[in-house]
Length: 450
Image: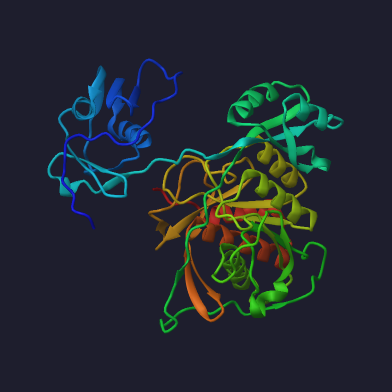
């Protein structure tokens, strides 16, 4: 670790708030001048520090129990003086790091007691020159695209869902404003990137007490309602050995082929789903998985690829959809696609996110989706998102296998896979119906208070 020296002020990469910010309760960090302006009235310490962390990128740590209400107004102060004004009688130290974000410690007693980290949600990233739109039946999409100088680079005609590409980011922004007011357009949004899948850690094979892969036999469905198919839009799913019969189909909706020399996230989620099914239906089940690769050779997926993946698994009979993925970008177009699936009786389970913040993660926060967060030792996991949009909490760790090598997988994506497997297993075993399953699971797996 590089040697560091605490200092009282240091301005790092930062950006200004939107020009339309209100005149009060605003802080503006200016990179070009190295100056800070603020107008805050009765701002509590925690939201104040969240704002600073969001703008500066600093990692901020606070001494538990520290409190302060900021009511100050100033313009163009150096950052150290600005922090003195904003933090009042609290002590602070800013520690620069090499090749890492600087760290701001806020405390009353000593710096060592500043241990509680301020977490902020990531700003959604988007494809700069693309928009998703959904149009009314009968709309001439080609004429609409030409009107804005755009190309149609993706389409689901039966749903009136299209991906448009524009000459540049400025043209994209201008078109979005107009499309939202077009009477033929049901929805228009940016094409957001989703967060990359969390890493999976190899475990020494000699570790004692590791659970093995689930022991399941594929049984034919005994009734229409016991024919349960789980859609899995994720990375590609690699061959599963003895569990391979449970993969009914593999689809790819993304460009490029992934590197299959190491364990892929989708493979881990498929195994975790089947582990959960086995706990409900020990020995045998009729549940199968349709896997849709929405990542291809990329490290991240987009809203458009997820939409294609969801529609592909539904077209192939999915009655449940496992979305062990997510991001901060809210898309009314993707929400409407999910709503259409829900109206047809499809159950959706999605990961709440691993930050941990209360800021909604999508698609988990869309209406009707079961948002799943993670438990650790019976409590909310320290990395797990929480908040009013979360519906249930399940264990956030799973042991999966790639060949003979065991891996530990952690995160709300794992919790989601458990939830989907439990729901599907119960439907295949007893046919209670989606509404009854969701109600029972939200009661049994209630989210603990943070």
